[in-house]
Length: 235
Image (cartoon, rainbow, N blue to C red; front, side):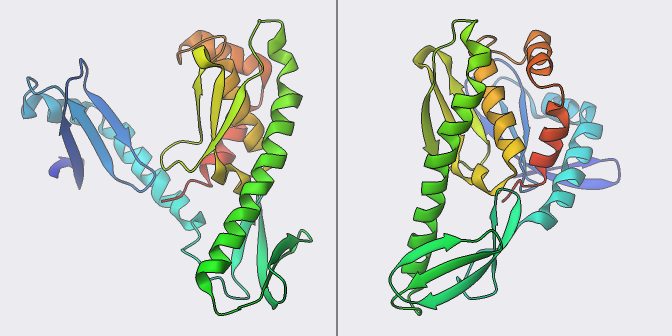
């Protein structure tokens, strides 16, 4: 862990030495700063680079600090707790009965035989969320995919995964897109944005201006959707 003064603030950052050509900077949603650099690059050069990026770093840290108020703490799975689903907050109701989870759009009903078993509660709700992902995400992909058919992009194979630092990823050569299962907590339009973003990589693999031109042509309001999505970043 290293410390650098940017403006009037002391910023801690993790420095990893690895075999990379360029200095790489990442501001994580938990307000940590990560830098990777070749062993040949001096600390003075690294900190000069960080100083040149001070406005960006401080703005990103302030943004994530603001968004952190949207984070829901770890659950105890007790009646009254809130769980996010498609941008809404569902209030949990724990009911003794046959193990089952369902929602009416206002409440999340957790029926469970042993109401004191927190581990089973967690598994049941996780299974319910997984089912919602498996039902909804392929449907949204099917709705969006026709836009890409004329570019000879393949119908993607979907992989669902718990991810800590990104909402989605793409492996165009394998014809797969990976979506973060926690997207199910965000509004439908945010999920559509992530899917379209990853599908656009089937046409343009990098984040060049051409990529963003295509993204804007396919989804003119993508920036607004991205801003909404960022509010759901979590630690």
